[in-house]
Length: 176
Figure 1 (cartoon, rainbow, N blue to C red):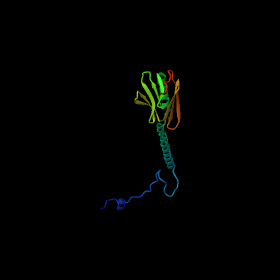
Figure 2: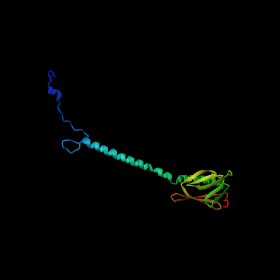
Figure 3: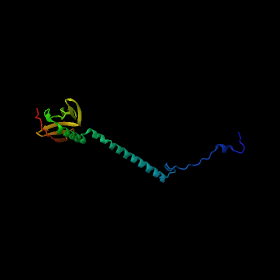
Figure 4: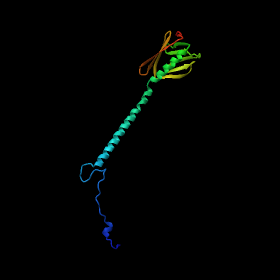
């Protein structure tokens, strides 16, 4: 098979042309340096990785507030104290019960309300039926009553003691 005007070696022979090195590869021919583009590429890669690490660590740091769920809440304590202060100021009779481990009072509606510890919480029961959780993560609860005041002491799971004093205007019923 012979083509007119074309030699056989020109059809099958290609000339090899040496390629130029790309910007993202090390230089060939024994040179041991970086181009400006390579240096900028590696700087960008370093910054991307370091910022990524900072973001991962900051995300891990933000996950720690979930540990606060397992601790005694100051806000919950304040809310409980304010609620009890309002209820005890309207109560008709107040006394400590169960050897100082519970507080009982008769509300202005005539219902007997008991504040007592239950498992790891402080609960409120009305007429010995059901309960309403008042305070979580409570280790110990003590009540002392005098003529015109009731003192509540709550110990949280870490051993810290919180105390609230309630002034009673209608008097305290002696402990039975």
